[in-house]
Image (cartoon, rainbow, N blue to C red):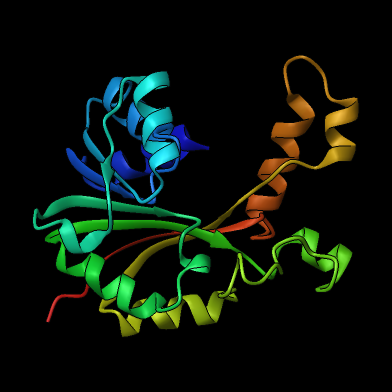
Length: 202
């Protein structure tokens, strides 16, 4: 997942300086620096995650929120964060203020149109879990809030997730899993929205 996203990031213009907002355990930041030669910073509010990143990946994350960031970045990534925050529009606008005018925002957030929600129904879909998740965006709503925040969408797709039935019968080469992922992605039925956008030129 992270390598696929990093390849898309490079495809959209290289983006040598990246800020990962809500960096979690730091693995994305680690891969961005070690495998893709990007200057990657990670921003994380959890002291436990910051400590884990330091111990496991020798990555020093920035602990705190966006208010403490004054640098402009070539790219900002926001993976499965938007569904957790009380003011998603304010967060997106704050990210825009920290992006280079030619920069990119890459984000993921759970998709209510995914195959799991369609099969299980809304009540049994695991992403409906307040107060942990307080925002869930259908595709049209996600594109609308990005537009309100001043972004122009360049690429939209979904990212797949594990399907237990496939995992149980898959081969060592993961052939079935890869095929299922590709099918879900092609139909935009993957677990998460994946959006690449840039600040709208005025």
